[in-house]
Length: 233
Image 1 (tube, one colour):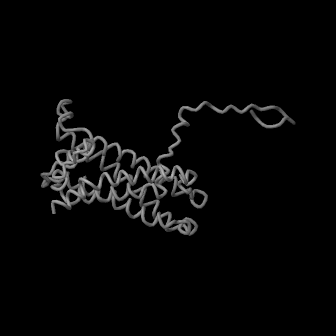
Image 2 (cartoon, rainbow, N blue to C red; image 1 turned 90 degrees about the vertical axis):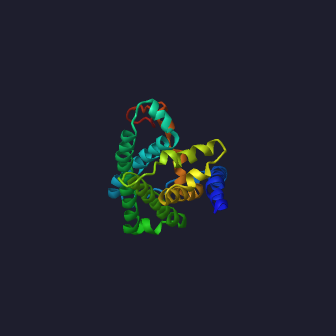
Image 3 (cartoon, helix red, strand yellow; image 1 turned 180 degrees about the horizontal axis):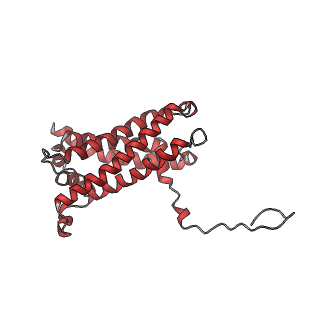
């Protein structure tokens, strides 16, 4: 069992990172034009206007919550005089709300894909793998959040999962910290690693092409040339 824990929590995270980075580099080198969402807005837009923002904004807040929960040590919040009760209450309310928004948006996107024949026909094999996996990751995360909020829970992920996660950056994985975590946390971590390993080979790759340049690009000014004149400058 010790060797299994070492493989899962000491080796697998680095293998996942290698697959993610190498796969992304390969796609960028040989399939740069494949960095796309394969937009289906022309087939159906009513549900997409609701599901898209719910999923994407919810996911952004989920990621922000994971960054704060996994990378910020308990000693830092203690120095900032943030009590454990306040920290966990905020994690439950903010994290739970973001997770539910993500889940609702994803569920609507899946319903839309199954309900609309044209979108269903355009669903690729990678979509059939990544959508259920993404749904399972979100459900496992919500379950972990809910289980940590119960009165019967004595597990503090900040002293277990977070310690393991930060130890990966020091290249000295604290395997025991993760091996002793409740099953739902371990399942969530394993599913997340599977998702990241598949990331470069699915439509999720478009997340690396967010058009941040549009925030700082100069305006394009169109000038009317008058009747009979050609084009706009």
